[in-house]
Length: 188
Image (cartoon, rainbow, N blue to C red; front, side):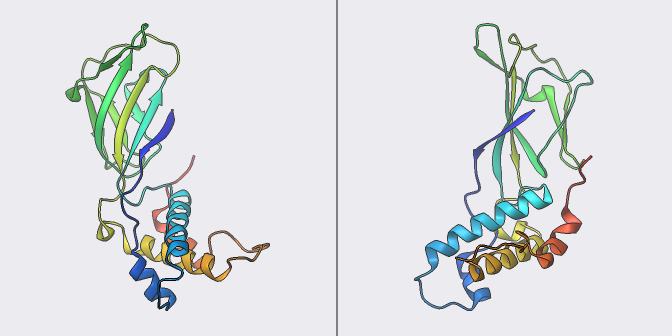
């Protein structure tokens, strides 16, 4: 299964004003840098935790429907199936009826069950596409506080060490790792 980001978050899990207060910065000279550090820190927290923080849309590409009818998702948390389609021999997409797929977003990892008739893919590779909405929610307050704090800690470290080579320094500071640990998805 190949996940492809279709639409990233519209906002970040912490605001510019929040980070500037955390860093004790006045003025606007560093705003562009801080924005980029916030995005980098969010991506680091998402990679460490295996979870999407703010709502984003992903496409999952499969060769065929799984034999047992359950698709274990590589993203978490997942709140909705946006669309699903199957490609025929001619390369034309056929929409899968929404009632044919059922999301179990509470499972970890989340999964989609084939709950009704679905067309069989006509091509050998990338025959099935399922678009999902992943993330804790659409707003800053939807993201658990410890994960937002981990973003702050990482931004502070990146801001402090800018221009340094960072040799021997972990990419994600220990304090941030401790904040992320309860949310980390188990990897098998």
